[in-house]
Image 1 (cartoon, rainbow, N blue to C red):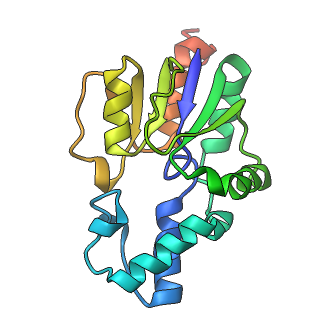
Image 2 (tube, helix red, strand yellow):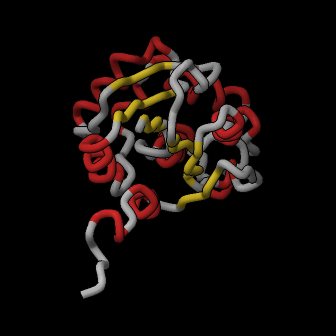
Length: 189
């Protein structure tokens, strides 16, 4: 089975780092629920200078080095890698590949392949399962016939599709991928 996995806000808690940087460097205090749109330019309370600043940190890649890993992601990815091909697919620009690879290595995030696809995540690979948070990519992947685990976020709460199941944590993803009966746990004695 081929499992596609997004990086930002699925493995990497990028939104939390954006909030931290905005507060520390710009004096702007936001909470997770303020992120109603994936596109930062639609964010209320951010002026043009703030946008230039944060987007500059994305373009130069520096924001990616301190992003925390989302709890449970490494462990579930390690389990997935034992049985399946794990392909990380990110909409980050190719220009930040070295920062991305360094972050993945420093945080010991396991994977078989890494693809940078800023325009589309339907990239010629037929994924059996895809773990994603961005609304438009999740719908596009689901429409292509792949099953999507949509990592819950304020910016994707409007999404609904027959091929999409909402998850709230890596524990949920682990339960979906490794149900107790399939792993030998929970057998009747």
